[in-house]
Amino acid sequence: MRKLYHTLCKAEVAVCGVGFVFLVIFVFMAAILRFFRISMSWNIDLAMLLLAWTAFLGADIAWRAGQLVGIDIVTRQFPRVVQKLFTIVIYILVTLAMIVILVFGIRLAWTERIRTYQSMPIPYSLVTLSLVVTASSMVVSTILKIKRAIINWNKE
Image (cartoon, rainbow, N blue to C red; front, side):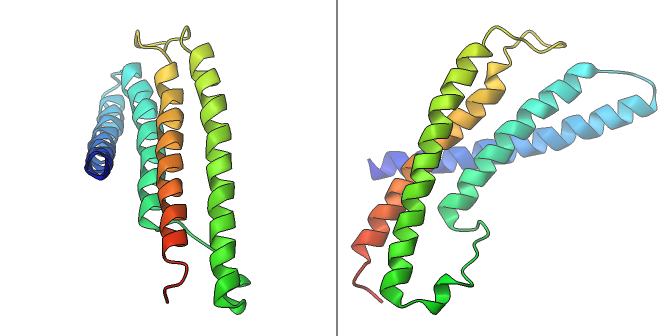
């Protein structure tokens, strides 16, 4: 199970990186073509799709790696036990928020399945699915963070 999780994490990083590269290429190409008065609206639509996926996947990658901004100016004054308790409570709140986002993201993706892009025959729900995929991945990552925090409770 652990090997599957690590494989999925590596795939997420690869998809995010490739998506970001293509996002930059499409936006740059649209700018160059616009300079020559050639309009390709599918470039911008595809770039928006890639932006949603790379932004949300990047947020999950940053969350898993502990690279998101945190404010601990108040909690660092507390005893170590209270800090660990706050960490677990925050992780539980993040998990609950991600579950809410997951449920409503699934509902939104279902309602957006009929709507298509103006320039491409693909459903707009592909954008909202980025939220669903990322929220589910963040739930798993946060549950593993909670498990790690409980296991390491007596350490340090």
